[in-house]
Length: 234
Length: 384
Image 1 (tube, rainbow over the protein chains, first blue to last red):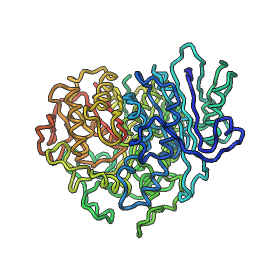
Image 2: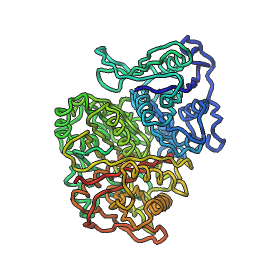
Image 3: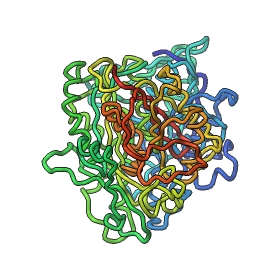
Image 4: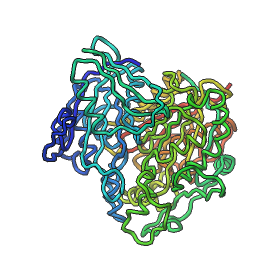
């Protein structure tokens, strides 16, 4: 399943670049500036939506012919869900409206005026599943922007304990004359754990930025297999 | 490409088995109850709560409300999925699950500041996610193919069909179980009420005096196969974005029209060949008016329209597949499920089926539209 990666972008609340994230170099936490959104649209948007919009906004998207979009997230609007429940029974209607997993897709499509198809993939295998969905869509013949992001999960959930918000976006297109990439399901008999979001996205963005060939494991969409991304030399 | 649908399952306020759901739906009865029988809230509305399941069956996961809803359909579909796994091999049967809110109801029980919420299963964050039941469901079915979870608000179920078609088109599966479920929850009840969208009495889609949504819960599953003995076929799926506002539909109904036209194109059908439209039909003033505009624009004729949310309530992310399963049954029965409590609104200009109607039915267009300007449509066709 071959395609091309046109561009990649990165955001982390705690790391200035993918390379910094891989090297463990941190910075004081910052929030996205997400310039794609007008002020009115910024109200009530969560960190995960802001990060999605930030990284997509850095890609060279053709607004005259916007690509299809695939958004992927493990936790979705988890901070919004926490705030809504804390407000019971008088919840904010605007916050509720933006509590759905496809809020970033809606906010993005409004911001760029795109009527193109969009979907949102979620779950513990969101990285691999998002890539699979995006590549299958590219194989249908149209460019796709894939945006992957997650915000920290509140301690009240007694769940994942990470404190860093991270996002990366990738502009994919059918094979033409650029750098070729492919994905493949590879049988594995080792125990499978879903890859760490920050490290995986950092490795992806870092590898795409380098001319050398590489192979990265994206996670599992099927028991007993792993989804691998192969980047050919540039 | 068209794919056969070889089995279906459905559960909601009309019943926990397909036979009960179909009998009540096509008889034009419903099962709404006052919200205060379910939740201690300060406003009036009705809701569609699924009856309790017979005891004895369980999934291998925490039996949260969403898990119970999923099980209600999974147990119906299990024999057909076992047969598909035997036919294609377990690793060639994929599972695509769709939901808008996933395990939010379980999370509310732990995090809500409201007192006296009834206890549920011991809380674990893993019960919150959209895919919280997916591993248990694939084990229950005995399948080991690709597993995906989709969440695009109320269009989720139809978008899951779109993902399933991609898996089949690209040879990553020979059969796909496409399932969806959403539960009643305080989050959605308070949220829709805050937006002024809950109807004080049972919803009246496309009526002149329509006043909003009746929330429901349920699950609906279909089994798509590359080949097989079909009860109906999935002709095509279309999706489109409004790019207008997060909750208000585009005034020119652009996203809905794109979705319907794309579904028709993929099914290689003229609008004239559609027997009826199963509308998203939420019962809100604006949504129904916009959907009516989209239908008028695409069809340019008085195509019959029905709104099954008047029967089941709005089951959110499972609304699309609920309508698909009812559409399949309508093709088998050659009868259109009715839109209940209808009073004509001449301003809408659409032809609503307000009583169970027998007709020659060949193709049904199903709509599912959602927050984020997310629109999806599917064409379901009768088998020859």
